[in-house]
Length: 115
Image (cartoon, rainbow, N blue to C red; front, side):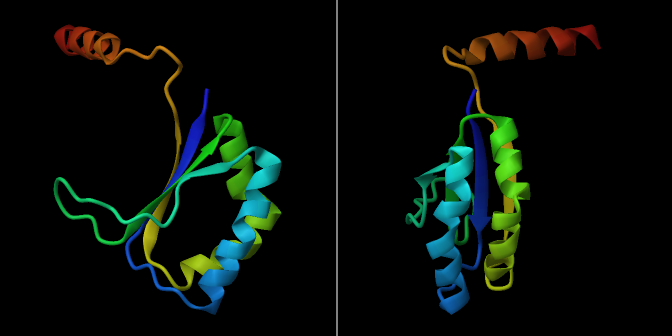
């Protein structure tokens, strides 16, 4: 099941450190099967506030995403971004093929009734 690394970059600023980070990040992801799904796109805000931009990286599974983030190669370049851009980053598991939200709703409804 795929997993995702997401970053909400609230204050994207381009400078030499950030450009070096961008130039080097792909090589840190490759050994873990990571690939960009969203990177540097203009966001269209439909609800609420969303300053900045979003980055979404897909990995084959949660273990690969965690290993990439903790890797020496990524940790070496991470300060190039964090010194220059405020934001949050998370790793999250995806849903399996054939996922049906109604099953989740049924499970949540049953749990609520049990309380």
